View 1 (tube, helix red, strand yellow):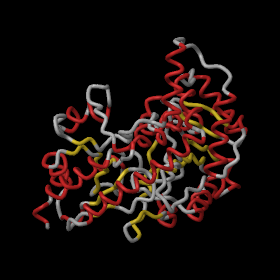
View 2: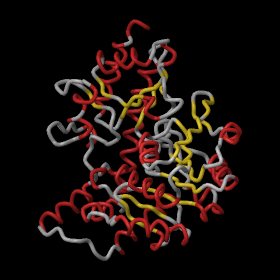
View 3: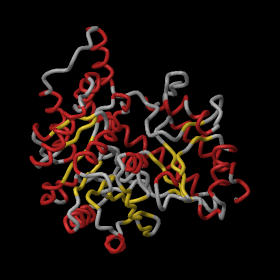
Length: 391
């Protein structure tokens, strides 16, 4: 039995994913399955838990000082797992990567400027951009044989003059694509042609299915670093999202100074729990745990996709990375209200609604597969039953 098979009751623990399922979606807490918020129902590796317990045993929770070991852990991880050599002074620490995106918007654009998103894409990007009084510019991804693809020719024609920044999601959420080096070079060239700052959110870079390999943007396009802001984190990889700690890595000194100044103006500093947890996670023990996790997620993916694809009219997009299944219901001929009602009402599964991810998401729902296999199997059977009339 895998340790990931352990079912841990998260009800009543202030879990957004489980305790807010019923108030937000109307899915009953008594027997509902929560498959919306992108955190996992697994404990992190022991090395992370041990770091927290050492802090608790010490019993004093003061300001964190001397972050050399923390930065060394990030540098080791990037070199060992991704082949990217990072300098310590490139690393800035934010309160998570949504905070990092917000700081980028604030540091590099002005009110009224446009920020390009390749939609459908992680919904928090548009929320942050709009809240900062910037224009959200949606450049829809193309569907190529059931997978998302870059559509640079179409984007060239629709890009307004006020575009100043592009936020890339790599690997892609919600589509699960691992972008190729050629595709990433295409993004870099697009940003260079249009003088765009490129913010590459690579938070899912460790959660890649066996046989796939993520390429960091600086390795795909080394000549883009003069306009590149890289973002990564331990939080998604190790299921410690509540730590709210993210790495913003900026090789260019000028861009780094502008970002650092904005952090200082807003009084942004990380919490000590997050730094201790991240330092512990980026280790050989953490790496072995991630390898086991990805193999387990791949097993969940196969079970879920086989069930979904067996229902006429339903299609799960091939998942290359992340633990988020992106299911297309357009083949059912149903409107979104009806297929969503069946999933949430009949199957009693809380999921993310496709339209929240922007243009192109209208016929989709997103399912979180990072949960014990028994729950994935149960969810698969419930969906099949909810659409039983199509079989």
